[in-house]
Length: 241
Ligand SMILES: C=C(O[C@@H]1C=C(C(=O)O)C=C[C@H]1O)C(=O)O
Image (cartoon, rainbow, N blue to C red):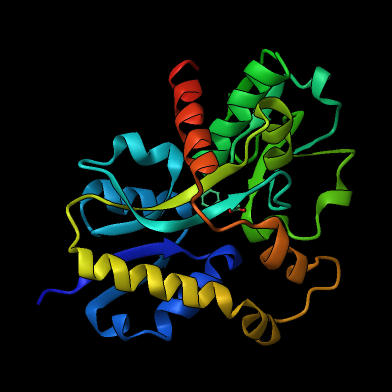
């Protein structure tokens, strides 16, 4: 049988899933690559992989997109790794630099600034551009919150805006995947989540970031009905940008 090709996010948020996959019999049946979120999306859209843990904002661009797992990268309120960092309070933000790693959070920033904060903002993608604020996601945000005059946790702001949890990335396939594989895959992901304490022992301690709180509490990995509702709502807001 051909191996199933999978691209997953290379950040710490995905390590519980990788732990589960690496400790399962699935390892012989798959080709696994770890990529930044934009590349996970590009590989799934381009057909280089069969399944990707992709930014949900990219789902409409995936041919035959179908969500194949009961787990995701999500949060119920603050997530502590998806931020708008700003020099000025949000009512004064006029320019924002987007994060080249991100698809979901760049769109989440636009949705929140337009529909929640009701700000008219110019967006830049150039790294050297001097802007009022910028989007930053993933491990590169760890411990950096206090460096900026204003930090907006977008998981928290989405909760303030909609009363809903949020899903940043989901396991999506671009073709039909055999049900037996999906069952084993869910089992592996669930096993990885149940071993987060073991994983935390293996990860280096960070001086100014609570990794335990991040993996055990801030991230919320179950793709619940409320998160699916949030996903549909988020995609409908993106369509109105
Ligand atoms: C919570 C996070 O979720 C992520 C955010 C993504 C995005 O903004 O496109 C994509 C994948 C996830 O890794 C994070 O990276 O901090």
